Image 1 (spheres, rainbow, N blue to C red):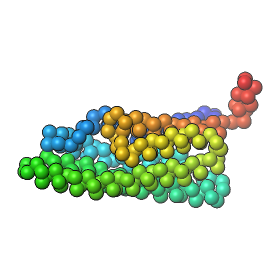
Image 2 (image 1 turned 90 degrees about the horizontal axis):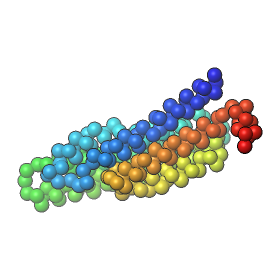
Image 3 (image 1 turned 60 degrees about the vertical axis):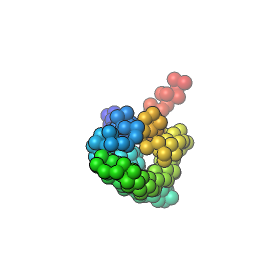
Image 4 (image 1 turned 180 degrees about the horizontal axis):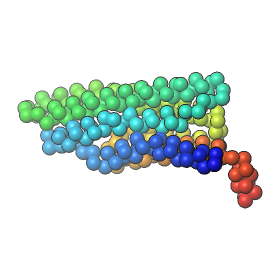
Length: 216
């Protein structure tokens, strides 16, 4: 019974962890490739829909770090990961509002195209700055979470860490634009899934581990 409960908990943790990147990958499939007067309406409404979804990337750090690490340094790493994940959520929501909703609204207004373009570029600059802070915080959260998870699950966390760091680095300039942005989000989902697997394997009952070893 306990094994079944642990398995169910691991599955639920994995589903919550990959929810954000999977939804963002789907959003990337319908994201306009560029902003213009023709795409402005679509651009604005898509970014309104994405407002509650971008922060969900941070959810994996919450659900996978719920167990208190054993060592003091690992506990500090967990707190650092949560703080950095919160910074990501704030920073990238800022990008979504400024470079998404605001820039799209400006681009859809009547007026001198040159002046409107200038305003849109100014909003992009501000939004990109907020987004960069958010993504670098996400990378820092990944490193800190790797320390916290590694204290419990050992080297099994490394594959997920490598995948998440590579995806985070791509996220700096890919946003969720298809195709690379979609691939980036799917890679993040894979990274969180690997972390979930590492924790589930570590938490298997001793009898099951012995049986696996005997089978090999």
